[in-house]
Length: 225
Image (cartoon, rainbow, N blue to C red; front, side, top):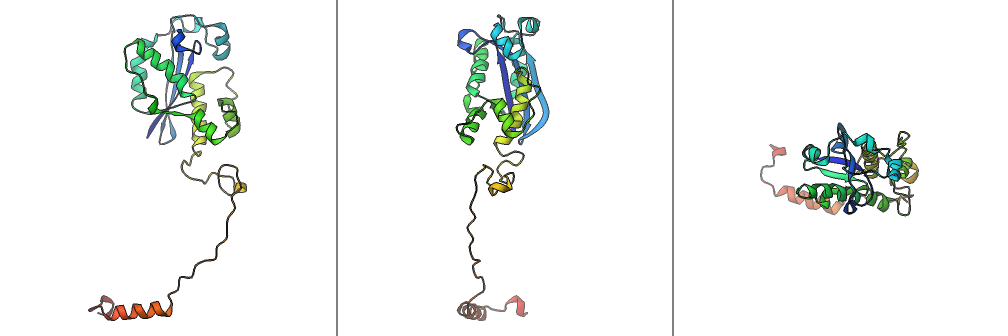
């Protein structure tokens, strides 16, 4: 099973308002394990990058002025994605920007149905708690000390680790990662174990008699040969 953990950095919040992608970062997972394969690309957005946004991701106009525009990297980007499921933190945001770029090129949009939104998973799993990437890194003890600025590849790598924890750590589908103190439930809740007396398995005299009569009707049983 191939999944791509994906993140983008942009010039703003609204692709319909003319904002563009300035960086894409992707991390490949096979069967929920990182393979070491990544995709990383800075992009010239063909417009200015507002100063307030530069303070978030540290990417200014000078940094990307000589980088390729999206049309020049779109084929390599889509080839890397292939038909993999896309794991994204707040998928509607990143997919909105990616599909706006594809629309400019006359390329079919990527469907939301192929995405897994880790924000939605986190909110279901930890209702009422913060679901941003920094908060989830703290919750799972993932080192994000290098995250001075947002960065697409760095954030995709952190998100890959967060995603694996959200689905059960290195044991997806199992409950072996639960703390012994919570009874192995894995969600921090105490599970009461109800003691039940073992059921008797010995045959009753009536059952033994019925079995004996049945055996007598067998013709040349192999154990009597």
